[in-house]
Length: 391
Image (cartoon, rainbow, N blue to C red; front, side, top):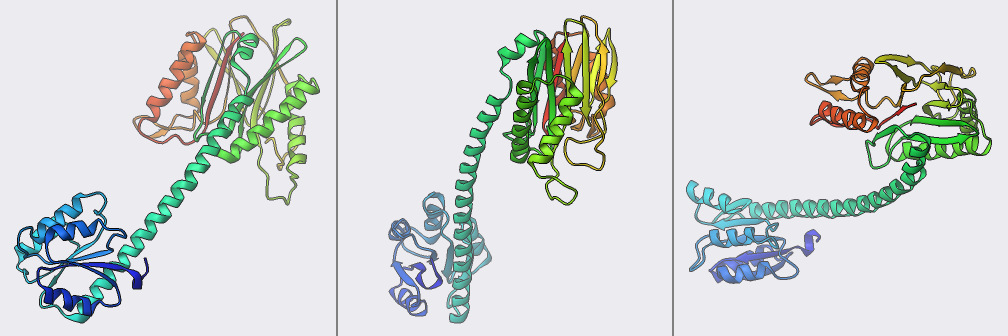
């Protein structure tokens, strides 16, 4: 609709009034009706009227009833209705607005005022129709994007270690993954090198699609470093991961893209009851007989950074029944609880110890239930990933 092609339906039981309005509004396409039933019928015509000028006092069905019927029909409910009537007492005006009119013009009308009000109402209708078209277009684009992202979610899930493979490597373990968006910037990885089991948990820069793309790089690079090159020392794996990522993304001091990931990696030597671990801005938590120890990683990123020294490899002699937890910062960073604050590391450490006596699967349920209860009606602020295992 343009201003000159707008269609106006004039409803009045007086032929003289209809003709007068036709003359005043001759720049527009005009439909007219001299009774209520015809007005309701014409409101359903195609193309629908863009505006209805409606008299109140008509034999049979009066203007209020016409207005109500048009408003209650979903096919015509969006047509603006303006009463043009001599019924200008406060009660009549109130009845008109209650019936669904958007404006009220008294008879005898001022031609200049009527033209101005008609032009204003048509402009509002044009803007509203344009907004609806834009909303429909945005919804269509959003649907296509969402469908694409949901397919990307399937690809991302398929790239993660299969449950059967993890169960073979780690008979007692759990994984809690709660993406902020459809896809996640957090990921986990597992592999075997000789008699070592290598486990990684990582938090890529960002979340949603950018984080998910980075996670796919991380997964692919770990397959190359561990699966192909057969590297099993955590610090060396992270060092090589950083080197490949910097080279792949062409990172330098002046580059715009300095995205990367935080990561923790453990290598389990079950023959010698020994665990090696290393981390980039991430820790591994170790619980033995109800006592928790934080195994800290280096304060360096897996990307180009101001500090680029070698990562430190650490070693721990474990005992059967020891539990280890690798997790990203999303869990501890969640706002919630009675005061709407972050859980923080202190709260996380208490919870780890509190749930450590349970089986791995019961722990997973406990961590998820606590997180959901802590978050409450608030919004999740980051991807959440936690892996627990008992050796």
